[in-house]
Length: 295
Image 1 (cartoon, helix red, strand yellow):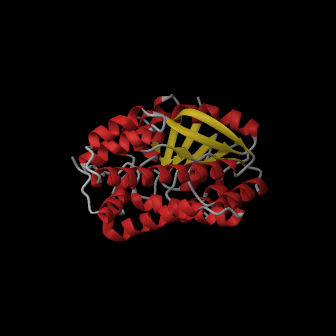
Image 2 (cartoon, rainbow, N blue to C red):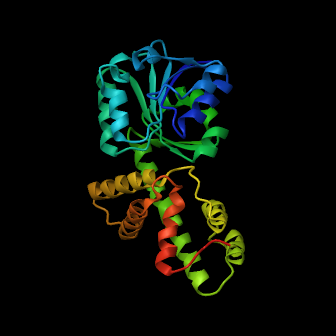
Image 3 (tube, rainbow, N blue to C red):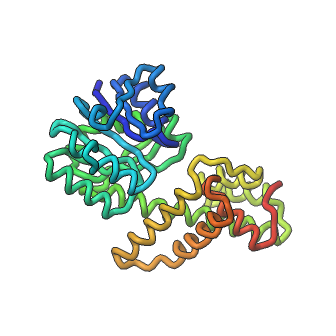
């Protein structure tokens, strides 16, 4: 088993760190907020007082952080990973961030002779806790094979996508599809309700038809229950929608449907739903239609 360090015990990170520990790895962790991690300590993980201390002697350093600013602070600071990791360490960024930030990380680690993978994850709090994430990986393939030992306990499936940056690019492509499905579900349910259909019957058709989707099933049931408790917060979905927009601009691809969805997400954040689940922007679609989707 490996000596692994995990940095960032937010919505996703706490579950991932716990699964590393359950799989038999020795786990050291660091989190900016000291109140996090008590359960990990009770289970045998070691709390570090600084990033520099956390990465000392680590075979693997993994981190999952909420945005680019957090990643830059953890990676590039004087107390950061790049300045303190050794060439024997494999560093794995599990965050969803801008492709330029990921490229900057890869360049700095390469300059220092540190092996690096970008490996953002698909899934929410539940999949992180159960070890059921879907992870997309960019970087050297031999490094990826060496890192399987710490990635497999976190995941249902692993997908090697190619050279450095490929994981982050795939994550943004996938998040475009997630947002599109939520938008289409909100529009479809609002139209059905306005047309006089019973929404539980509508979901019954969606569950079996050739356009079925796990997102439609899970989110649809919660929408009818009026449940928008956060597994992945709406303000983070807006962050991701902005990343997708910038990425598409950078590579020269027009994404009109995704741009329209981003505007709805922005309106929902401005309406006060930022801390609710990402699906809460469906409420704005329903409000525009003048319907209540609860049954």
